[in-house]
Image (cartoon, rainbow, N blue to C red; front, side, top):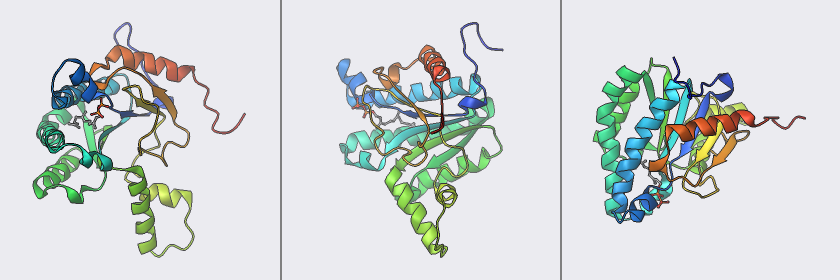
Length: 234
Ligand code: FPP
């Protein structure tokens, strides 16, 4: 049963994606190291995913680490990798309580064997659950598209259809996002889901990721439902 002020969604909002931006600025504003912002960001990510499940969203995708993020200072990269590793350790319990089905999007080959093993295990043990959570790590949309084209080339495809490409992307298991939300004030996609965003709605907010609340999600959902999606038609 929903709380009084809680929105509930229907099939029109099946998949929501988040660009979780603003962790660094959140920390800097408090005169804390940027890495602390990522810790709070990771906590908020867990809270927001659960709330999305509670209001009836079927699939959530988050941009946790891009192919470009390796260029950040080593201690920041290490912090995010540690947060990811710690997060993976909590997934088994979380999935039992919240019915989460985990998928990791991106090129996993760069990660340590230990991390890759954890990822594979979490995906395997959660595969029959219903709340899909795609976590994009070492993800870049152009790299994903090139990866898909190469897979199709290896199969010997001469004529490639849009469906072939969609089916060869890391997101082949789920529909395109209905809504892409970016926190942190910037208005761009930053190499996230370029193919999949064909008819996604966009929502940009100045709120920094660690500050994003469940009330904000309610507002975002209401705004989504006020939009008229025409898919190029009249
Ligand atoms: C963008 O904020 C955020 C990231 C590059 C990393 C996102 C990571 C997390 C939320 C935590 C780890 C995730 C998991 C799944 C455990 P920014 O650093 O670019 O912020 P800024 O724009 O204020 O500098």
